[in-house]
Image 1 (cartoon, rainbow over the protein chains, first blue to last red):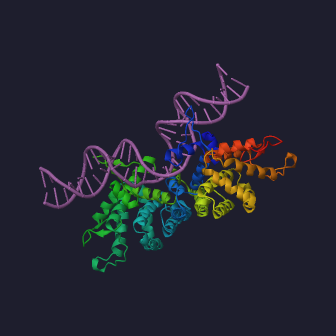
Image 2 (image 1 turned 90 degrees about the horizontal axis):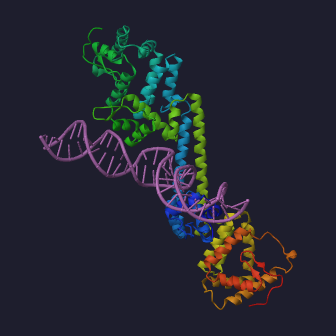
Image 3 (image 1 turned 90 degrees about the vertical axis):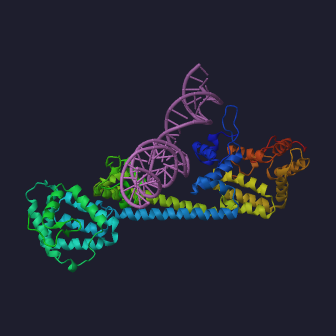
Length: 263
Length: 263
DNA sequence: CTTGACCCTGACGCAGCGTCAGGGTTGCAC
DNA sequence: GTGCAACCCTGACGCTGCGTCAGGGTCAAG
């Protein structure tokens, strides 16, 4: 007669595993000796090895029981089933590998390649990390909601960086991220922005070229909110814009057909 | 401001997952509104998307935190580490697939191919399922302890099946599995077995050809025990053998140099 | 008699949430 | 005003396969 540790050693498993199989009903509880110790016969070794063999082959313990008692046909069917599961798990892991491989640099986290390029260009142009971080977070939101449109958006942004006027404005705006709401330089920047907006958007809404740049309202609201959260001067800046006949941030809109005079 | 379900929807995760990330400290607890509801700003969406991106790439949650705050270098190192883990898990699954594929039939469970062939031969020769089951369990024990020697053992067993005398004895022995200990046919079978033993093992132990067939004592004891457990008449049969100058079952041994006369 | 090696049961821990349970809140329709 | 659906909250168990204490008996050797 064998003790539990001898049994476990013969089958190549731990004592804890044997007790676990008892608890799960996979291996019948054997008789006890006078002091309550489990005592096993040789047949238990064979049973335990069968359990271990299936378990090591990736069979969930909950299915081991049926497999032990199954005939060839059911056994084959169950094996096919388990093989499917294993294949699926392998494919899942392979997908994971590809995904983390693409996360090589910190910037690419949750962003498509074109956005990473855009952020890299900003860095080249000397924008601060704080500003780039804000841009990154904003584009993460967009990429999550509208992945298909990211190439378009990024193309537009890259173009803006090529245009000297718009780049200059961008540099100004980037600075404001660290400014107080009361900073006296804000109105001038608002003027510059409005000037560019007036130039880009014809007064007649009929003539507005809708190239699909507009973002859905809820996403725009989210991005506006992000702006307001990250930039202390944002509320004041939006007020200045409103005074100049424009509202919004992500999607600029005229508040009136005839814009009011500056400041 | 967003509710938890809105946040979850933007990031493409469940509400439960968000709360889980809070509990794990991955996502900071936001402020609460007057009725205790969590209220999120847009920055939380970006944070959550980053967490989800890493988690979906197979990064364990316990490591997500460090990755979020890591620079490119540490990030790359961590990614390499995680990729190793994923590769290992894939290899493990592939090993499992091969193993269960080899478990196609019920007989091959925990047995090498040559043992399956041997059991198949027994079936062809008309041995009963109960007997074959006993043989199977015995060889499972041997295969677990001495996998390297299974080819040798199986070759010897196959040879025995080819020898008419030994096969006839085998058939007799197989029958005894269902007999009562008091069955009057037992002594005759013991005689036959002893006759074969005397022929195979020279009386002079010096001349015994030790071809490595002997099993280690503990394994032999285990197999003897299995025999005693499965076959009701086993104790009586061993007594009959002892009266004829032989002891043991798995490893037969003379009890005295000059065997006593039969029964 | 002591010491170390085993044996027992019971219970928590891990990973990543899913899923009640039990109870407040909100917002809209009637 | 009220009723109902849809949310929100905390707390806790469930799943997988054991590992690992905790707390306490047992056995064999010295």
